[in-house]
Amino acid sequence: MEDPKKKSKQIQIKANEETSQGRYSNSMFIAHGPEEFIIDWLLNSPTGAHLVSRIIVTPGHVKRIIAALSDNLKKYEEMFGEVKLAGPAEEQFH
Image (cartoon, rainbow, N blue to C red):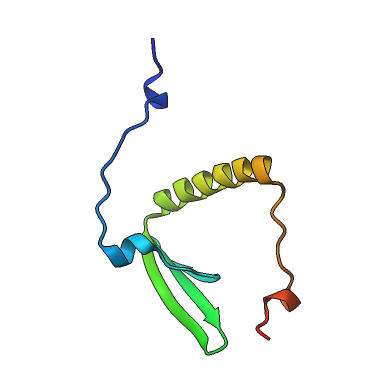
């Protein structure tokens, strides 16, 4: 018998043109209260930091996001090699 957890659900995602193109973010800020986490995705540029998107989620969803990101990063590194973090000097604009 097939494991019901392994069945993948297909969902239809609707998005307007601007949203479907995505946004680039190279920084983030996280704040939280008792009932939610607020994740601000930022673009640090020579003209300053700009808010790209703000996502507000429950603490339980943050845990699922972290698990999903950890799993996907592990798979990415198995396929493409270890991701190296840039040092502070490499993050500056020239």
